[in-house]
Image (tube, rainbow, N blue to C red; front, side, top):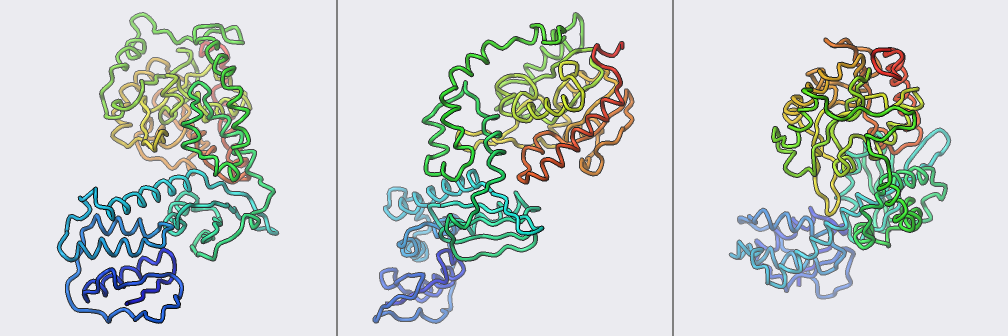
Length: 475
């Protein structure tokens, strides 16, 4: 017998080196004992020395092995070596035998690992830990498989500027802003109880909860109960579910855009006779200028008075906007309304639209995740945006984010460097600032407060430059 002792549970390099030695030396799978820790086996022998000879495997088998080695299954090493042995001995298309017990088992393990990876990326929630003048973010997660190492890169890219630790029972990952390291597993008690981000997560979840689309079974499938104890927002679920019927009825009874607003004015959104804007609204319903239309629910045109002094331009509709057919009605829109009010601007007096009129997304199960439009898609949609700008002719244009800046200015912009400065356009002034969704993505409370204050300051500048706007441009 040949004993192979790997350095740790996902020792891919050690596994690959051992497999090459064993396979090239002709050691059959039934003569190999795999383990991670030292095994007390009196009959075990050392693996054979490095053998001379070729060793090439199908790429799909290598990819499958890299995934399955993360499975919390002691037999995975033997399973993978059996498949590799068969491919090496002539069954080059072994993975195409979908009814084969080993192939079926390996594929099921890979599928389970992919699901576990999705849950980790969706349900990790950081808590703020302050030690003296230092701030760190710590999260506790209980994965089903050994997936911490393979997912660390995702969290580095997602939270590159944040110092964080993700603790799990098996392995803990730590990022200090420059280097990644791993330590032994931890316990839930290692995460402090004073969760300063809990309220943020509860408010955010409540803001994106759509009672009209509630399906409890589907929700629990995507957010299994076993994760709820570590999700701050889970505390809001029972109340939101209980009130879903009443909230849905309230949404149905909301006034239409043509109904009087609280201020007594009406939003002028109906097409004017012989208006280029009015014709564009109708023509845009059949827009095929780029490929985004193929999957979006509907086009989302601008909304607001056609004599508005200020036009706000965002990037594109989101999931909520795609369903409702109106711009800025989801979480980003609610945050925008709050900031506008603090800046002294009445959204009802503004024209609000997007650089791109269809929702571009990628599917993740039942979820539709935002995907940023590319330069070609922004350029294709300028046809509609130019019609809106010509019809509204605003004194002031607010560019919310990089895509809006690129659409109007015709170049790439650096939002954080160029924001909050009045720029001259051929038909008025423009101010570039962040998109409100940027604020929602910030995980740090201090950063959110700081950036939100800067966002409101940019909008106050817009209000000062535009002058009185409550009754339109004629004032």
